[in-house]
Every structure is written in structure tokens, then in C-alpha cells.
Amino acid sequence: MTSAIREYLLNTSFHGVRYLAERDRHWTERVFWLTCCVLSWFASGLLMKASWYDFQNNAISFVVETNFLDWNTSFPAVAVCETENQDNIATTTDALFGDPHDYNIDEMINELVFFRGLSYYLLQLCGPNTDPHPQCITSNFSQFQSYVRTPCSKLFKKCMWNQVEFDCCTYFSKLDTELGTCYPHYKMISNVRIGPGTFYVELYGFNNVYPMSQYDVPTLITSQADVIQISPNIHFRRFISFKEIVNQPEVRDVSLAQRNCRFAEESYLDVYKYYSYSACNVQCRKEAQISMCNCTHHYMPNTSVSQQCNLLGIECLNKHYNDLAVLKAHWTNRPGLVCSCIPSCTDIEMTVIRDEKFGIYEDLGIVEIALERLPSERFKRNVVRGKLDLVVSMGGSVGLFVGASILSFVEIIYFFTLRVANTRNNKNSQDFTFPYVN
Image (cartoon, rainbow, N blue to C red; front, side, top):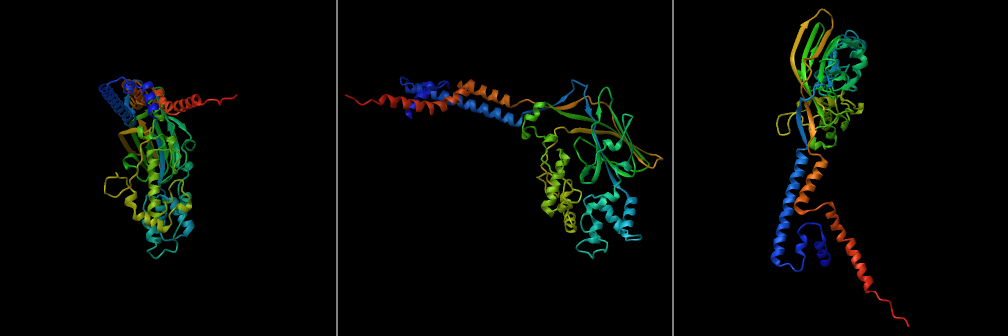
């Protein structure tokens, strides 16, 4: 083994190492070259460590792009969720429970159909700690949605994009949310040829309209400042501006930890097919409800009936309402839900410029959402330290300080495996002699 090490040191391509093994060198020379080699390896290690740190923590640059304005800008998605329908509730309860009946039942149905996280009337009438009402509902709470909620064809009257009318129910798709059935609309584009863009919709009844990023979903904890509450005889106008976030194609090759965002197609959620920050929070709340109460509320997306709460489960959700209704940071002590959700890579930064609201004579609500002006800026993620940059940086460090390449490390394997075996075989063949034959 000693001879193999000596042979390797004499023949390796690492700079300075052979002086340690040459027989005619004075011990002071060996100490000198050993010191130089150690310092070179140490300096190389420091540079490699710095390259690895930058690759892990500073691989992405987030810049404002202003050098090109002929963009196709995706107009915010718009979702419509019905919030009240007393006429249908009255019709449904009359049909199911007779007329007259206890009108607290109407309030209970309203709570269940337009669920907001609490169920006071349900627990007051049917709760396990009360004298149950003879017309109690104990399970399958989502069944009333189909009786009460207005279908798409009767919810929308007119839809327009940039003064061009389109069929509402063709473009507003049905989506199950924490709030029940909502109708989101995507794929609206603004650019210099089309103009900033104005979305116009006429709605019957009482509804919430959610302007949001693509793939976002309405949730129980959506900020009310972002929601447009619309009712009959109201015309509401909102003027907005926003900045998109675009990504260099190479961003998809960077790990999640490095870019700190997730693309829609990288979804791991079981509540929705596509990832978004709001969808991740819904998933987080679903897991928290199952953990606390062993069930979820009846509108939790992609949840089987067996996972939905019965009366005991609803009572548990009410008990933990403060822990489920708001988000909090992990380091705070106040009640709330800790969700480790990272942003979507394609979020938008939306700003409300102004709101206008006035009365109208028509027995419907009108919502207009207009882009104040075409964006002159957008955010862009660029990869500044990719895998190739890491290889080049580390290779340069090793080459500069120790004169090594990838083949230098292959030499180590070669000298202590194949070279040793071949040297031993050659020696054995030289020692072997044929017996003398007369």
C-alpha cells in the first residue's frame, strides 16, 4: 500500500503533490510543499463553499422589467359566488317541512347553504347538548345546495369583455370551493392592440365577486377588502392596476427551496388540481380540521361524504373556529392556523385605484372591473446561478488552486484499484518459473 501511495503522489495531476514523495527532497522542502498544498486545498474549499451557498440562496434574481411594453397581460381572473337567496330558501323549506313551519329552520338552511365557518342555528336546534328539533338535519349538509343556489343560467344576465358580449355560462366554469359552488372566469388578455380591458357582468341576486390571480380560489379567509359585494339595484365599478410576475424558462429547473415559489402544475394538493397560495391554504385548513375534529366541513373541495362532519363534527368546528378562521405566523401565540404555503410563481400584484358605487333602477347588480392603464412594468424572475454556473465556479476554484480536473479524481480510483491489481499481476507473472524438464 505504501508503494501504491508513493506511486500515486509521483504521478498525480494535482499540483505540488509529487514534491512530497520524491526521495531526493530535503525535509524542509517537503514541509514547504505540504504547507502550500494544504493552503491551496483550504482556499479551494472556501471558494467551493461560497459557490454552493450562493447557488442555494441566491440563485434567483427578482427584477423589474421595463424595457419592453408590447406584452400580453393576463387580466385578473374573476369569480362569482352567490351569498344569499331567501326566496329559494323559503320555497325549499315550505316544500320539505310544510307551511307554516318553524322559521328558525330557514336560518339553519341559510347557514348550511351559504356556509361561513359557523353554524349557530344548526347547533341551537339540533345540537347534541339541546333538545333536538323534530325537523333536525343531522348529516349530509351539502344536499340543500342544489335546492337553494341559483344555477348559472339564472345567475348571469349579461357578460361583456371590452364591450363585446359573450355567453356567460360558456366561459364561467363551475368550481367547488369552501364557500360552495362558485363560477370563475379566466383567459382575458390585455395588450396594446386590445387596450387596457374592461370586464362587465350583470348578476341576479346577492353575490360576491372576487378579482384574483389565475388559479387562485375564493376561500373563507379571503380579505373582504378584495371582495366586491353586489346586490340588486347596485352598479359597482372598480378601477385597478397590477403588475404581473413572469419567469425565465430556466426557473422551472431550479429547486423550490431556491426559487421559493411553486408553479401551478407542481401541485401536490388533493383539494385542487392546480397550485395557488389560496388553494394551499384550503388544503392546510382541511388537514387541520381532520386533525382537530376528524372530519371537514361539508363544502371542503374533493371530500367524500364520509369525511364530512356530522353534528358532533360541526360542533367541534365551531369550538375551534378561532383556530381555523385566520392565518398566523408560527412564532405568534394568538389563535390561528399556521400554514407553510409558499407563493405561486405567477401571482400578480393588484392595486385598487378607486371604487365607484351608485344605484340603478334595474332589479339586478352590475359589476365593472377596468384596468386603469396598461402595465408599464412587470416583475421577472431570472436564474443567475444555475447548475452549470455551479459546476463552472467549483471547477474554476479547484483548477486555480490545485490544478485539478474531473479526471484528477478519476486518477485516485484508478491508482488504488486497477493500477494496484495490474502491478500485482505483473509481479506474480515475473516470479513464476517453469519446472526444469529433462
